[in-house]
Amino acid sequence: MTTLIGKTAVVTGAASGIGKEIAMTLAAQGAAVGIADLNFAGAQAVADQIEKLGGKAMGVAMDVTSEEAVNQGIDKVAAEFGPIDILVSNAGIQIVSPIETYAFSDWKKMQAIHVDGAFLTTKAALKHMYKDDRGGVVIYMGSVHSHEASLLKCAYVAAKHALLGLARVLAKEGAQKNVRSHVVCPGFVRTPLIDQQIPQQAAKLGISEEEVVNRVMLGRTVDGTFTTVDDVAQTVLFLCTFPTAALTGQSFIVSHGWYMQ
Ligand code: NAD
Image 1 (cartoon, rainbow, N blue to C red):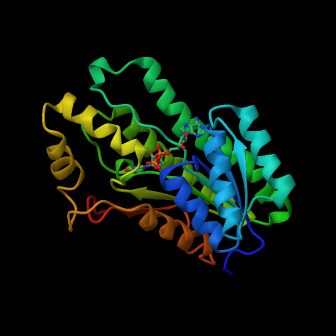
Image 2 (cartoon, rainbow, N blue to C red):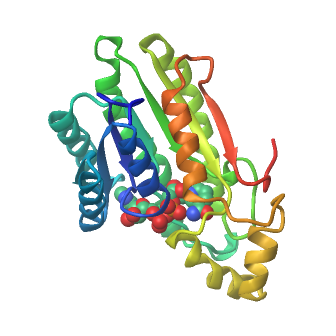
């Protein structure tokens, strides 16, 4: 528990799934972590769990699509734990449907959470990272769908591709201020986001739930296994602790070979 002592991190969407594991992993290395989520009770429960294990954390109510909520939430974490060193922009949802029936309201909701949320949290965190060129690391939760397309996922694929652009601009703009950025791109991870998708995809694609799992989600992996929350969290930890800008503006695919660059 040493590598991140004295660092302050904010992880969005950290009440559940991948974000929760990232928050716990960063806290286990000594970071003080703001657990930001729409679900405040869930965020506080994760913060309590971290504190019980001897770490430092606080729950923060945050809708990443609201500029006011994002600014207030990030500043609250900085006021409690010190200026933000690490931002993991992870909050996300999934809505599946073919393009011709994809509701415009759902499209806009998807872009708002994934793309607007990434932009707003970045802008709020940079205020702290740029001060006196102290620097920091920004990690966006992309997906194999930052690189590859799948049926039914037009809004998700578009949003996850957009994060590559944002991360690359930040890598260039942030370099003078010691800020690095990356996109971490998981394959399929068994979280609530995936579990709710299995019956929906089966119904929309006209195949069984077993086929969705074995063919759509795991068929292209090298070992027939789901990516785990720990696979993703360890990658984030590595990128947060890597010491130089030799690694910046990159995307790291963590998918058991589902997608190879
Ligand atoms: P999850 O459903 O377990 O967790 C998502 C969290 O985001 C929830 O706690 C939810 O309350 C929160 N959230 C949703 N909307 C929000 C908002 N507007 N403001 C703040 N918080 C909000 O899902 P997960 O699988 O852990 O997904 C986390 C991220 O990983 C997402 O960006 C997702 O696209 C990405 N991802 C997931 C997988 C996968 O297979 N599970 C694969 C690739 C990428």
